[in-house]
Image 1 (cartoon, rainbow, N blue to C red):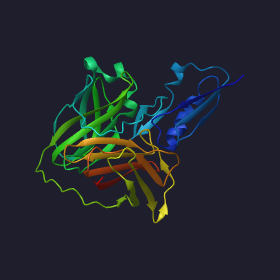
Image 2: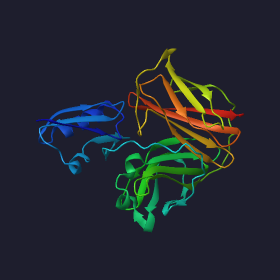
Image 3: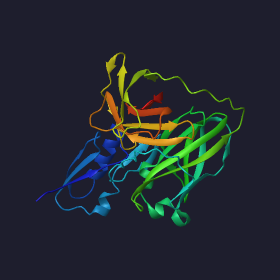
Length: 312
């Protein structure tokens, strides 16, 4: 008699990830059929006997910027929809830059120390925290925005490759703590050597170009509880319908409040693969905000940037 089990695989963002998960799970003794859906992250395993969960959770491989990391069979986290200014320490978790002064350049390796309560490495308390460890970096004038998955080093070490220009920078990490059953967002500052020339906030527009794709903003970001926003992606005037999930969602929207660098991270809602990405979440006050929307297509990251004036 066959046994069918369903899992959610986090960390997949391309067809290569699907092939890797399929190959590794199929190689397990007793497995007779494997079905993997990239869009939903669903993994269906049919076997001729029950597979112990402790074996199942280590299956699968994800790739990001050419670095192999383990993909755990866990649900993708749902992000908190309230804006906050991330601190350097919260609930016993802490973050700081190992070298807070950096030189400008492309692909600069920047290392951070991230500790769990009691000074432990995250892996000692939340062994799968790194599977959705968002690393978000931007200069304090809200230029140079970058968003990717932080890579784990030894012990408390985490790192990323950043493109840095002179001036003050804010770096945020965001992950789900299973130990506390809540999200943790931490922030630290960097100073990049050189003469700093802050740029003014761009004027509000409803369309941005992302590597040749036209990304159009719609909806109504507001202080109301039912606030919602959306972007529609097109190429040469035609809807783009082959967007791919990354970092646990088809699309991500990060809202930054310029006055204090308040931070709000939203996942797109709904199903499908484009051309529309919908986001639900409100901001606390009227005023100007910077909205960053990133998504994947054909294994390539895309970023659209908007200035939004909230009037109600």
